[in-house]
Length: 366
Image (tube, helix red, strand yellow):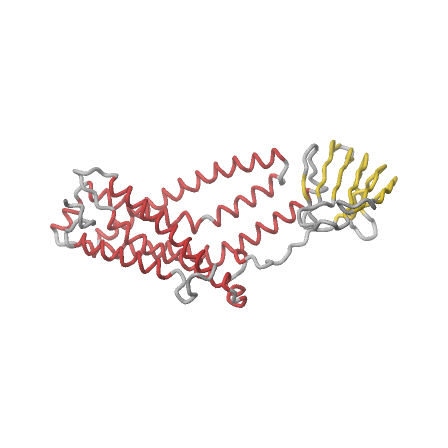
């Protein structure tokens, strides 16, 4: 049917355009953050660009539902403003016949959102964690910036270098402290100060070392007086290759199989949360079609404002329901489906009122 193809095409075009605008906005915002982190020496620029690219991929399942909702809202709203809906109604084409092309578009978007939410996003989260760990570990010695306090991973040692000679690969006035936030009070930790430092590679094993020259080492526990003081002419610190710690119970990085085998409340609630996103896409498409109605006498932005409120109410209610499920305040079998059911009933009610030429809100006619 020509009308259905036209609505499908216009809604899809608006969705793609809005999605591109949102991605470009996030791109500029992310580039600003990357430049700020590069300036303070947090990570290498290449690593930050990779992390930002992965975060952009993760944001697909968040931005696409909003893009589809606004795309359908603008497309159907234009048809109402140009009286095309009135003409279609006079020709015997009801609002119910326009649901099919929008559901087809919503199904395509929901499949893409499901793929990102169920499989791509956990992989991206795991990759981001690996890049963060490996970059932090390597930045500790190979990417040192002068005058910047940094922290190694996973030992979380704090280090500071006053000056870096990149030509001769020498460091000056090095400070390394083993005091980390995860160290309990009373444990013995070491603090090292050296006037110079160089890099060495063992020819037999191939392992890298940071060699500290003309320094001092202090070892002891905070609050105790039995500190040990050692002076050295040469002290080698082995640079261990970065090792990625397993998921460590972080459900955001687990696959569906891992979440199901874990079986904890947090893991099962994460499954509900990932499934909720593609389901919400289909329901939002129906809500957008109903709320796109525009009365020329009341202005074109009245229903648009209400539609945006409904979208954020839906999103926030899903977040609240997920938090309740995670804390055990709602049964696991219920999951987030009660939120979907509530808005699905709301969409059918509005659809019934609009199809029967009734105002969306019973008291709005007054």
